[in-house]
Image (cartoon, rainbow, N blue to C red; front, top):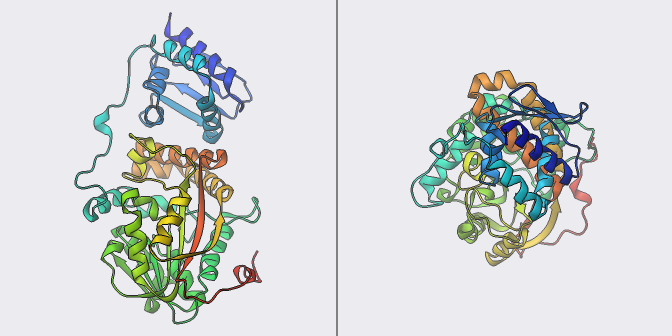
Length: 414
């Protein structure tokens, strides 16, 4: 069977099992199939393109087929990935027929395993964690600025209305963290994994705290210090370039936003134990994290854990709560924000696409594709409920109880 005919048959099989609207498909010959009004187009760059996408069947295989240009994705990438996600639920007969056809295609591949980043040393040691985190966050401050809000907040925003601007929802999230922690002037506040300083600057400016931010990324630390100076709060904001495990001192309140995803399951108890020791009597910790909803252990390489967050691993929310309570915290409040993160990621994808030329100039086409795919795919995963995100408010059990939630939203929230 010729490659063009086999590719057309594969497309027809996939369309037959998908729930979302099908994308259009364009072959290396110029032939096109599928609805003309489709929001996205899958471009097959050579006769073996669908084989590169499907064999061996895994998300890292499919992701690398796009990253290394065996295929291209034109138009709405999220729509294309919604269609692709439906195929996970395809029955065994359809999957077998698709794979049999894919094996008839030429074995051309534009990727090799040698192109995958690799790290040495003991897993989740301080040295290896620094290298893995820097791989992600030292992509470049100018690159991140292309798709984040002006405060460069790189975590889930808090939307009250899907139509409101990303900047408004991110500012609300920062303020809500401060309110949940009940920050007061003079409080010693620690932000673990502080990024570009958005939270410590907000807390110092609006709540009068003495803020410390810690990050292992040198580029982030330099930018966070500059932003604190520009905001006029540098005397109350200290940025430390180090691993959180090396910190000493006690803090009245601690926030950890999007950081525990870098902590492996074997280190989860150590993570909460260390933060408990850094917390002053009567203090609180807000732990904001992405959680998996899967009951299956995460084994083997995946696209995100290979190319985006090396060594990263998501925990189940119940495991995080259990580890926190074992470390001596009391759970006081839980808020889940799954739909807000799906929407946040859509904003980031659109911003990145709007700045595609500049992004490619800064980091090259391969890295641009990795980030476009990772953020679009994550948005779909949140929409489908495969992953979620939440804030756990954890307190020293001796802290006086606060009744109700009236304190959480500012009166001038917009």
